[in-house]
Amino acid sequence: MSQSRNRWIVRVILALAVLMFVGVSVVPIIGAFNNTTSINQNTASPQGNLASSDQKSKLQDEVRGYELVLQREPENQTALKGVLQARLQLLSLNQGDVQGVIAPLEKLAKLNPERSEYGVLLAQAKQQIGDKEGAAQAYRTILDTQPGDLKALQGMVALLLDQQRPEAAIGLLQDTLTNANQANTIQPGSVNVVAVQVLLGNIYAAQKRYPQAITVYDQAIKKDPKDFRPVLAKAMLLKEQGKMTQAKPLFDSAVGLAPTQYRDEINKAATATPTPAPASKK
Image (cartoon, rainbow, N blue to C red):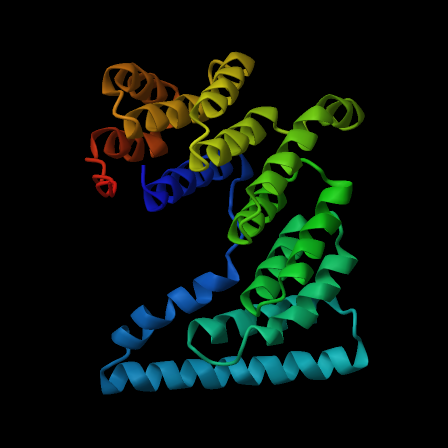
């Protein structure tokens, strides 16, 4: 199995696992840059260029206004949220830089420790500018008090994998599972064990440690037989190994268990033709 195919499997299952239980996902900083090309294409006409220019001017005025408020009231959260939103929108229009969103995010994360989305966005912003240690620290700050926060766990795992540190990512998730009972006793529901198991299984799969991946997926299925995520994860792994006879009933089961909005994507995953792995050199 090629490394690119492994990454594809991981991304699909991570997305499904997190979206299912987190709800509205945090808009990543990188997404602002990904939108730039389409925005530039859509504003190729004179009318589009004029509209884009007007929007940029309006957003820049908003930023200046909020900055004046923050000079008088540095912890005014309405102004902090306003300047953050305006700068993110400017980023989507290819204006400004990521550095501009870090200061308001740091203040919002400090003022709202219970709102992990600010810390996750801060980590993403720091990672975008190359400050990987700063990103890791932002994730750790969340996980120190909310060890089961899925957004922070997913972000930290992705960061560790990007740094070629899969064992550290595995260790983080194993520790989370080891401490899950205690955490859930103190705060019921604070660690979603099945979601963490799926994340762990995905890393094993990406590392071609297939028996361990299957074991973790089976544990998750046993933990909650009505949860479609580990069933789908196992099905996709078996499919990528060419074991369609074993994978098909799992895909069918995942479709039956999943909420309606996910069923089309699961059916597509079940019927998609895997990319052939490169022939090995002798």
